[in-house]
Length: 237
Ligand code: CA
Image 1 (cartoon, rainbow, N blue to C red):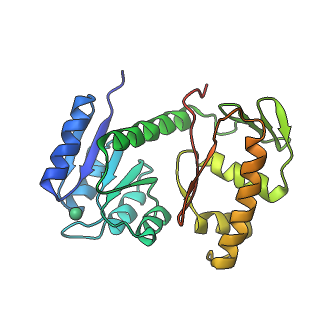
Image 2 (cartoon, helix red, strand yellow):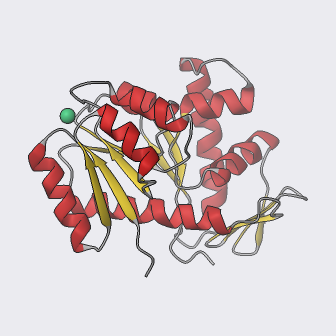
Image 3 (cartoon, rainbow, N blue to C red):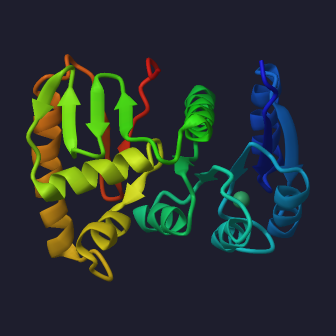
């Protein structure tokens, strides 16, 4: 199996060793950083496969760390933070984090998120950029004809529903905030209450249409107060 390396950015020693032990048990290579400055240097010099980032660091705010890393790299960043407020998660996602896990966390849950991130990274690496088709479990999107099928059955989507679905597919595995989706689909500067309500209506309809023939497969996950994500199903070819 390919060896992946993970950079843990965490100033709390107990949490850092807990994560490190769990990762090493799964044969991941591990680097650690105790503050933002060291995180930024190690992200560049060690080129980790994934970064786990605490937002509350002694020297800089985790959000600034995301900004710095994103200037040079698309490495998946999973925020692991005690900040339970939705606004912090949303800010981190808007600044380019891929996912978030709230403290206190379950180690198994964290491992599952890391594995999902790695699967998504491998999938995108292997994906032909000019691919005409997207496939995830029974869901197929044909980009040329804008045709969507679930288990062979055509799903009739409105143009906006199609755009939202195509965007979620493009960023499969990543949580897209309401702001990101509203900006991309409607071109509004920010997602206010009206836009979020509007988006929710489209999402409910999209979800219903996709589920009609999905045989229990769930493609879209709702993050209440934050946004939506397309789940990468394990049976992806
Ligand atoms: Ca901290």
